Image (cartoon, rainbow, N blue to C red; front, side, top):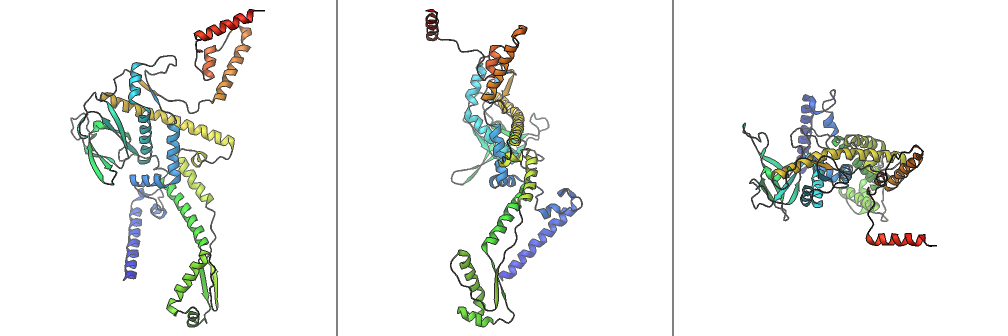
Length: 449
């Protein structure tokens, strides 16, 4: 009965594979190979990638997990700063609006925003739930002018649109009318909560045609998993020392079974027990009669070349150098150039993040959590900034240029510019009263004989 059931299951699976292949052959858009429309079915590549696929890839895929972590770690190496105006003047004082904004946009706030950015990379978009101190239910509009208590970050799989605004004359036509947040409680229970759009900020693109960060490299990750799993399975099977017993055609199985004290039907099970003992490393004797025992060993191909091809494909799709992605350093010059490229790539991505941050600030202004301001800007530090040694070397070069320009009567760089280039504040700190007295005493003593 069990054997018939297994045959039926195998037959059904085979029919499903054939139906899948026929469907892909009838729909050329399911693969890139126009000559072999069922190629993706044979390769094991999915046509439609869901959030669960991307989340599983991030959670269990070492390369994918590392790519997301490295990108987030570099982009959020330091927190941004929101200033009033469009330029940063290092000599100006902090404005009242900036001080109030810092009380809302704290370090904890930026850490949560960075977590939302990470989840956006994994699942195409993520949600930021705003906990406003208005005492209302989540499905009601926010009372303007109340403070922000905290924010909660949600995966794309837990925050979805429940209702759309379909009113043709509505100001928010085509936008979500109500969100639904799927909350998992500490006891494992699931609670579905309706959330008003006032209390939700979406980071990323939740449109059906959005392309996620990991999506272009998904096929390469599938191939990487096959290479890793297949090579590991091959090594395991060789190490297991599976035995092959080749009996002579004239062997008397009844006589052989009598040596073990079993009947012929139980002889196979006896050989299996001996094979288990041999693989355990115990001293075991395998008695045969006219039989040759050989281990089943196959030659394992080097997975390196195939692995490297798919790794390079994934690195190209993620726009992260291979040496940065896997932490391999083969040469100082190559690694330095890759690091500078990766820093420039993350610095450029910070520019895109600035627009998201400005949109969130505009939402907080609309909710009355932040005051309105004429103009604001998001600034970051430079990931490719010079080190302390490089700054001092630049300041020394500037001072040497000033010394060489004495004959012309010009001084290309001021002392303040040289101090800034060296990494210090523009103007030296003023001397205190004690310092002035000490300096005067030093001067007086220096003038005495």
